[in-house]
Amino acid sequence: MTDTSMTFIQFLLDERRRLDTDRDLTTLLHSVATACKAISNALKNGALADVLGSLESENVQGETQKKLDVIANEIFLKRCEFSGVLGAMVSEEMDHIYEIPAKFPKGRYVLLFDPLDGSSNIDVNVSVGSIFSILKLNDVPDTNSYDQVLRPGVEQVAAGYALYGPSTMLVLSTGSGVHGFTLDGNIGEFRLTHRDITIPADCAEFAINMSREQWWEPPVQRYVKECVEGEAGPRGKYINMRWIASMVAEVHRVLMRGGVFMYPIDEKTRDKGGRLRLFYEANPMAFLIEQAGGAASTGRGRIMEVAPKDPHQRVPVILGSRNEVALIEQYHAEHDAT
Ligand code: F6P
Image 1 (cartoon, rainbow, N blue to C red):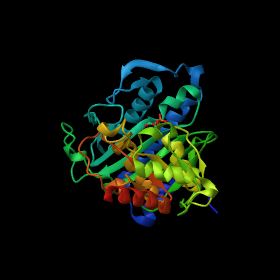
Image 2 (image 1 turned 30 degrees about the vertical axis):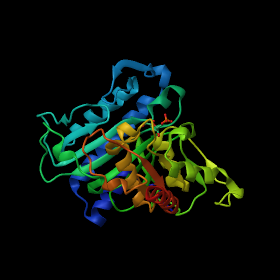
Image 3 (image 1 turned 135 degrees about the horizontal axis):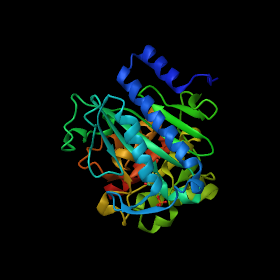
């Protein structure tokens, strides 16, 4: 049984002793957890705190920014620049690398993050999350260009997310399993509640935005059609469907009980390469899913092996229970061979 008396920082210190992890990584993860607690707090009072709704501005992706997108981004920057171990930060909400102010020491770590994913859900009070990915470079990076941070997902040294749902959770991997922590409001600390999360290899649940079926590629249409056919179809069983439109909540469900989550490429997103961002969504979630024994694919290859060309690059995402992901990859291969 998980020892829920262990706080997040105790867990990090314990990992450091057992696995000899880097002291600077502990410091950084502690800063990230503090940022997530502050965002959780900013979300808590919703309309009462006048933080809902949109701003006039657009982010680098051309999407209208929500007030909370900007607040959460600022919280990440301010909480993490102080750590003294970062050489740069790269955010989904910014069109430039964030340079660590001169008054703070710099280090070789780079933090890439989506401060508030699924933010279209904020105004309707549905779960949202923050996603982060951590790289360790050979040197303090030159922040005048993205060159040094364009690393594939296999080079991540840690990744995780905070889920702001009925309770706030932090889910983390530093490369030795996936562990979940629940925010204890009484003491203001995350406490270990889910040690060594693993995803079952098989499942009977899928998640996809069905309204886009008309634009999907044939292998995805085939897979979903066979799921929906239930007992009478080739799968021979009822397969359930869910769609929250919040990737963090969706991935969390997959980590908790298995399933497959898909945002495949389609006719409407082909020119952009897909819908979800490689750096801020696909890579960190792929790291967690693989660490939990699942698989994460574009349909035609491992997500974490995609060579990035642009920090805001998008990719198709198919992740979850490994036998399901393998079947979807097989359908892509069969289609591409014809
Ligand atoms: O990329 C942001 C995001 O909100 C994800 O969290 C989510 O999976 C997806 O977009 C929802 O997309 P759609 O609007 O097509 O349901």
